[in-house]
Length: 112
Image (cartoon, rainbow, N blue to C red; front, side, top):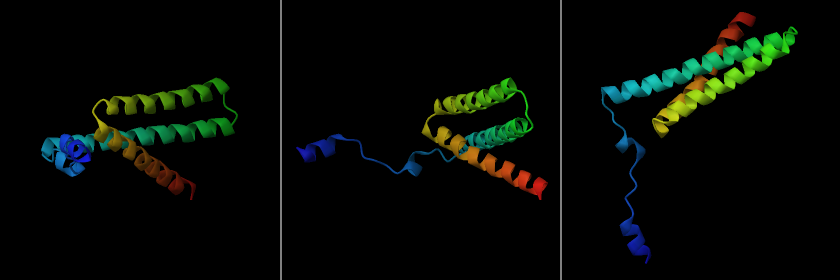
């Protein structure tokens, strides 16, 4: 019975065999990653702005609205990327921490 189950299943292939490595595929992958980086920069810059507003005693409604807008933007972009499949979602998700790195490096230079 186990032999028959194995024979009925599709053979598992390595992820790289299924990727379209032509110019359009790589350009698309770069576009998804760049979208993630831009989203990360927007998210973490907005987070820094919100923290400064909170520390300076800014309006509660502005702080709450900014926080909700950040999460809706990130969630919406990730949901749209997921419509393209797992690889676009992964590339956008990996780009977000890259954007965080850029914002943190910029802020570290400004503070020093």
